[in-house]
Amino acid sequence: MLAIRDRQDRAAFADLFRHFAPRVKAFLIKSGMSPALAEECAQDVMATLWQKAHLFDPERASVATWVFTIARNRRIDALRRAKRPEPEDLPWGPEPEPDQADAFEMQQETDRLGKALAQLPEKQRALIERAYFGDLSHTEIAEETGLPLGTIKSRIRLALEKLRHHMS
Image (cartoon, rainbow, N blue to C red; front, top):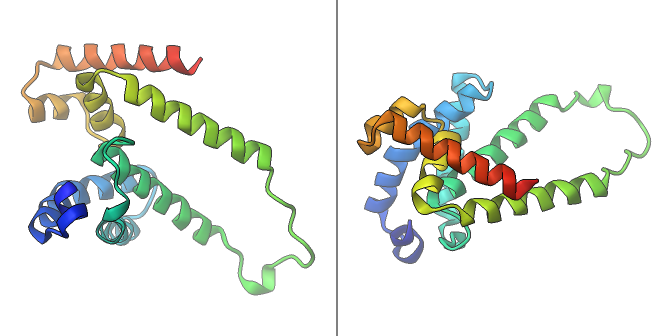
């Protein structure tokens, strides 16, 4: 990602695309999107990665976290677009203001989770990112990493316990 950010390296982006595009699409499909919409959204996510590579900060998040955060946001945008009423169905009059307290609380919780993830040991954080942001099964992670399935499960369980403790 740094080669893309710093030098607009097209070969590095092609590698990143080959790795993440299918995973982003699978994540979107598993979250309820149709395959066609998931494909379109995944393409949009990858285009955003290229266009906003200069914003990537490895000290704030891993590449996987950054990619899947963008994907999650695109999914939310797509859901909002799908729920928009036709113009003739629009209610007249002022819309109620969104509850700022809820939005603020959600942002604080997201920030706390990011900090908690950053405090995990690298081996545990990498597995959490693959399992939850990469949408991989424990078996797929074991195959990818070469680690025993029991080790994968143990590290993820320990990481989740640490996250629960930090978030409570």
